[in-house]
Length: 94
Image (cartoon, rainbow, N blue to C red):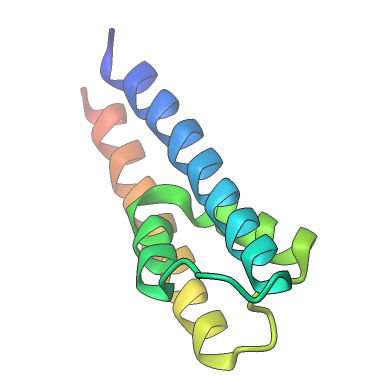
């Protein structure tokens, strides 16, 4: 499997995982049960799952009123854009 295919599969998987984790946390919040740690959700965003995180936040209206959480998610988005840009430039140079 080449590097581009691996990166594509990774990004699809990590974004799906991030989306599902946000969904699970939202459902747990509705039932006042054990919750997913915010640190876990931020980590998923920073390691490539930020688009899944943002999609879930919008779709489920989850964590959107927590200013600090939103700011960290925006930071993760900017970080991911930078990483994608660097990866793209690396691939172009091959």
